Length: 633
Figure 1: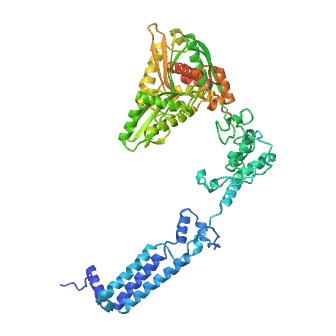
Figure 2: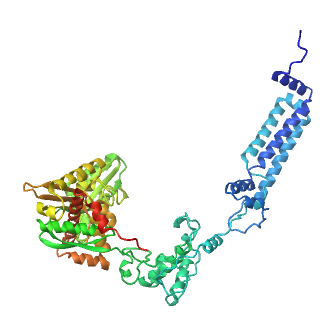
Figure 3: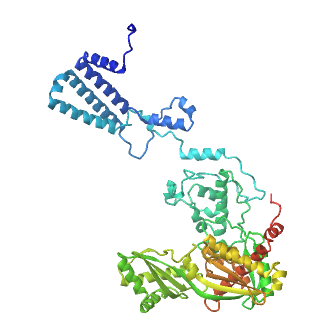
């Protein structure tokens, strides 16, 4: 028996029925409907993505829902010197284009059947519509906008600064009175953005104000600090306008005000700044924007017998046990043979990088430099710039079009970087006379190598190349160093040689040479950053046929001087006097070489004592006994 229930229509049947219904609709009505939908969609695109919508999305993302629920306050457009876009012209253009598009659609719909059968007319309509659509989609996001949305609604920079300062919690009061001056009026404490460097602050590009009060020196320090905060006086002008001592006091007030706005008021209270440091010597030589100085404890190790003479070693450090340990090493060396130190090389280096048009021409420059007669010409040019400097050698290295010219000179008692830099420019000028196409890329091409770990310094040396050794009787090793000769020798081989090799170190075949080098550098006014290469050291130990301990330290790149730089400061001068090397020597270079010997002596004493502590497993116990005390409150 047949099923009397009708089967449900399929999807295909539904589509066929829809097409049949469309066929009953007139062509004019169908095209009018399609065009009306297209027109509505175009207006939707044209008026979406406006500034107010984007602002709403950003505020919602930042969690500012409360502000979104409030009606937007209309603001008057702020006057500005900057040219404003003519938004009214854009709005008028939008209306004209939209109206033209609408009229063209109505014209086509009024006689669609005729235009569809006329290919020429149809092509014209399609071309015009294509232009309209290009306009609509090309200006997507530019809408019939509320012009007030473009007005900046953020608070001004000054309001932000004042608000931030007013919300900072009161700073902790220092137990020492910093100054009797009244509080500084804080104005424009910070730059526009907490992450913006000084160079991005528009105020940093302003020319210094010429309205400096004529009675500036008569004003109290607090008022002068306020002028600095208001950018009416530049920070770096204080020393010239006042004096170095008073400039430090004013600058401290200025920084105290800025730090207080961050909740760090009184942070500089215990930073020494009184007349213990001669700021006149610092100005233009050692430091800028000075606010004080850092006191580092200075200990004295020794005496140590060095090349037959007793020497004390000043060491500036905050590492407990370092001076005591070095002092123990000095004692053991004095109880033995004493230390014997020799300088193998003495010459500071600079390696300018020059460039030639081709690799062939670069090679020609290198080959020309290596001719002995040409070296004499370069030496004459170099030594014309200095009284003490002597050009020792010039070694070129070619890399494609580049030539790295490593220049080495004797610099007397100065460390010599300024001397060799000046002389290197003269060498380059001399080369240009022969090779006019030679171009100086960089005065330092990093083959010098300054303040960086480099195999070049480890192999070729830089500054003073020193080797120092000593022999310690086995009884002294046991009584003073508290270990045995075989134990310390084995520890040195496995730690300083094998361990450093496994680490892939360059010049680091030692226990802690950098500790002693840096401590002596800080005490004597050397450049502490040159500790990087000056600490290159290999420590070797052997058991002699008599059973005693032989130790040596080879240090190929100790860079020191006794004149210039920080050596002229009073405290550092005092430490140099304690060694007996202040200023220039009787013969140029004598004092600087002696200081290099002292650095090597401090290093070998420190290496000896630390390796003994490691061999006897007493390092931790010594530090716990001598380097721990209750934390200060």
